[in-house]
Image 1 (tube, rainbow, N blue to C red):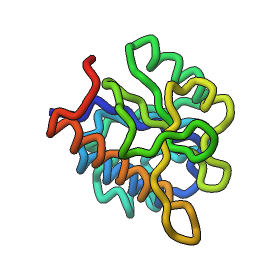
Image 2: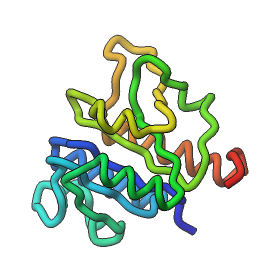
Image 3: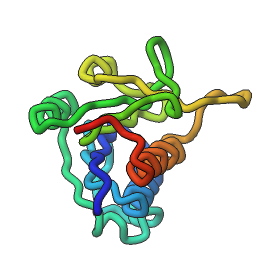
Length: 160
C-alpha cells in the first residue's frame, strides 16, 4: 500500500539529488513526486544514475509553478508541510502529521521558497547536533519519508 505522501521538490538544483529522492521515494512507497521550478525531470542520464530505475516506477509530474501545485494538493485534501528550519519549526520526532500529506523539500542553498512556505500548514525540522546544522536534501528526504512510513506502520498518526 503506498504511503499517502506526495513529495514536492522546490527548485532542487542537483540532478543527483533528484535521482536519489526518486530512489528513496520508491523504497519508502511515496505515492508521487511533483518537480517544481528548476527541478530537473526524467529522462536525464545524471538523474537516472542515482535513481537506478525508480524514475520509471514512481509517479511524477512537473510544475513550473510550485505555489499552484500546492494549491491543487490542498484542494485535493492534502495537508502541506515544509522540511525547513527556522521560526515555528517543529522537531520531526515531535510532529503529529496528518495524511494525506504533501512534503515540500527545498533548494540545496536557499531552502523552501517564501511563497511555498506561506502555503504550508507546518514547518518540520530534523534535529541537528553536528557543526553543519544541515543535511543533504536527498538524505533529509529519506529521514522524513521513513519516519512517516514508521508512523503509518505503528499507527502513530492523526485521524484523516
